[in-house]
Image (tube, rainbow, N blue to C red):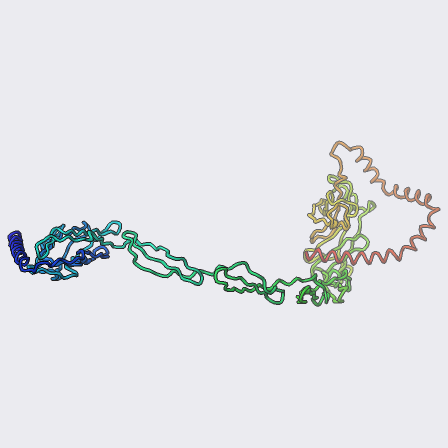
Length: 527
């Protein structure tokens, strides 16, 4: 049917054209300007619809025009709109690829402009952003005289999605002038946008010091931009103070803090520092009230700088001046008026033989103290535990041992003791004492185990001689005394004079030793 209509129109156009040719006056020429067809470009994204316009320029007067339009596989022709510029339009409604566009006009049409608008749908996915190319070609063009007309045609145009873009710097920015940047499609090279680049930061040179800083004021420095000459001032921080060595303006005492000052070399700024007050420097304690077995004593010390006094209680204690044996106890252990009696057992005492027999398996070198307590001439026992101090004297603390002798069972029991040596922890003792706690009264034996008796069977003869000597010890003592009297008769006068002369000094030294020992006992008990 379409071919029949097409042929009918074609024959009609031919007949009409011939008639028109013969009706035109002779000598009329076609326009000298060259006719052309132009196809517009378009921009679209995936899934969008774009319009392409086909325009005619320098129309010589057309009676027929047939165009073929080819397009990319990523485009779908959805509509063709005739603008009615050339006359009757014959358009295939099935929208093929290529699509044929046909116009005819018996009288001919010399109008210029848009002859048709084609609508294309862009595919949802378009590789590389290029939707496709549209090509328009002229298959037939006849003027009023039914002569062929040659058209110069913009053969193709692209529909681009401008999916990929980049910025191209046209001119660089400075700190005073903005640069120019074009946003260009990487696919079709179309300039999509022109924009200004931001100004750059100033490019400053090296700072120059205008004013030096001190420890009391800031300084100033300036840098200049090498592009525009703008100045940038900056502050130089204050310098640190340079302080001299500290000077004490007020010395510390035992009761007040002192003050030291440091001054800056340049501005005189001062920093005061507090010097902590000193510790008191106390003298040795002096016994102001001597303790007894039933009452506390009191000792006092005085600061040599400020004179402040400190007083401490001395626990109840007593020292035997003859033997240096001391006892200490808590208040209430002994009743008021109780005193201590200490007797050193000698070889002439009847108990000595029993003591020697009891110690025969331990040592032959020992010293025994009979320690008791009396109140109103009656013997008493302590009401609790007491602490006893017995001097080691010539005994070494490594080999010294202490025992208690029980008169009833005539046996000995070893006592655990603490040894007090010199502060430098050497064996050359300054105050060598043994300290122990007990509630017993009686014989306390200090044994020197360095001189222990030999094993049984080795020194039987020596033991026999010793027993003979012990049985005749009284006679031997008197014989010895007689010999000494005869030999020393010439020296007796000198001895008496010397003893009288030193009597006072000895008494004074004994008092001093007693005070020192009280102090030591009190310190040990507190520890």
